[in-house]
Image 1 (cartoon, helix red, strand yellow):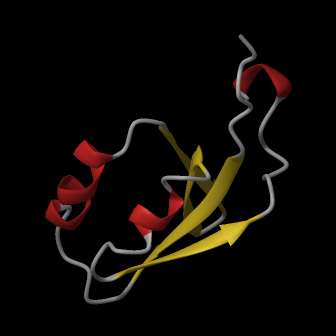
Image 2 (cartoon, one colour):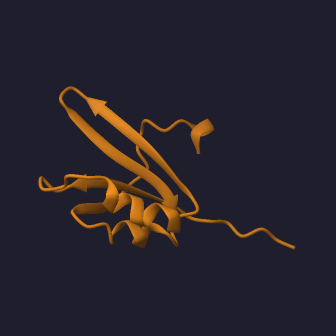
Image 3 (cartoon, one colour):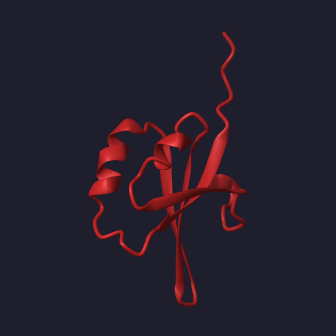
Length: 82
């Protein structure tokens, strides 16, 4: 038996200004099997970045009042985190 390689996707979550509560996320998270959240803070800006597998990245596009943008692997990730 060979093991299947799962492609990793990186997304930046950008909440709209009208985003008020996390219940939008709570509806999606039970459907996701593989996700890691990273919060990146630089000066006065915070980024919410997630790592998930390719087959589940479309779930994050369905979150109301959040834009999920696919990004390249961030530089702040070290090999032991992968």
